[in-house]
Image (cartoon, rainbow, N blue to C red; front, side, top):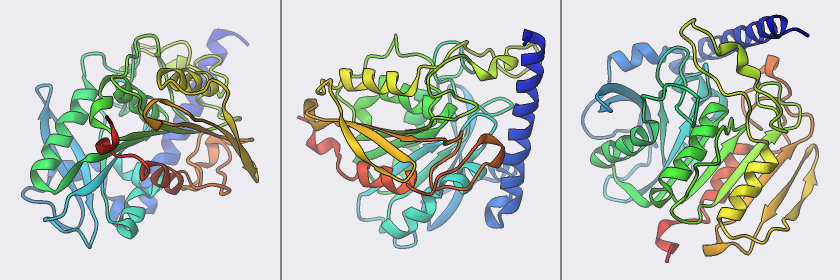
Length: 332
């Protein structure tokens, strides 16, 4: 297949993904109001129960994030907080519907932040040659954390970060650059583009999920499906390769000083995995593999054209269970 034909093929796929995500947003009720519109009328003052859009100045530009505060929130009690970064082409609204982090937060009583990327389509500067290199999204994360800490009772020892696709890659970048501020990390279908410059300041617990039939972020890391976006059409300068799921997880286990031979996780339907243990500071590293899984969030809202969504595991709940085992209080 020629480069021109390949480019057209992935342009069509990218367009379909965009339509699906837009339909997902439209399918909601409260969350169907577009992210851009809600960011134009941000909330102010102390955090109150429910979902609100907030804006801050980060890197000299106005940026937006959504904050969910659970109904039983007590402003006098330090509360865990989960950041969840949307994927390329997505936004906080659709990501909230795909992952359901705020629904779990309502049950478990923690805060949730859905940050918003920059440019169009929305994306994160997750590493070398990806996104807008003039935007420091690690600093944006830190600025949001500071802002939320000023309006809500955030427990600084129980800050957790996760993301999907490009947002999963952004999660890994934050783990590389700001591990001292986050207790544990999670990634789903992570578009990890650069591990060469990763120097985490401490062993950071990590849990990841990836489908073997992911048509967007190849499980093996073979080739860059968004190569078509390397254009002058105002989209993005894209890398040529991702790091394979098993490869970057093994690298992370090495960063954490884990036993190089992982323990197998018993298969649950179409889901199996490995767990790296005996790590420094007990910072375990886990990878769940979905056999035949697509570019989707396990247990979340299906994204039909990007492959199969398994219900044999729920990534949101599994991550939260993993996160609860870690606190920065436990770090020597």
